[in-house]
Image (tube, rainbow, N blue to C red; front, top):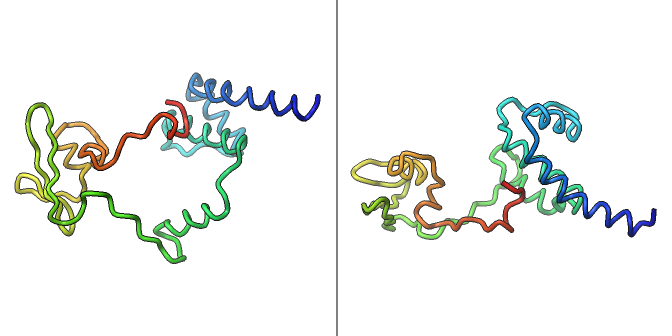
Length: 161
């Protein structure tokens, strides 16, 4: 088989491999994990997360993994890293004194950004996600709930859902 034909066959197999991951039951995901990583998946990993990690690995093997520069940058962001840490950029609208407003089920909710945390209805919270949970009763990404972060497009996601 020519190199070109082999590349075309590999290119065609990736979408099928990714689609097949979504069909695997937990035991099959565990077997696939052991085959790919050479060890069992951590016990706390859900099936959905195992699918995403396996999908990333398939794509990285196919298209190439992160560059050494990107890996070094990510290593510097780790809290336990001994290297110099890089501060994360501030999210828009999170300067102290900013008032965040969100309507939920016909009610306006106002949140004041503080130096260390957020204030809502006389209570202080350490994260916007906790406030979003208090408002909705379900788990939300707080910055996304308050419109500070846009929902990623399907093209930006690394694995199909």
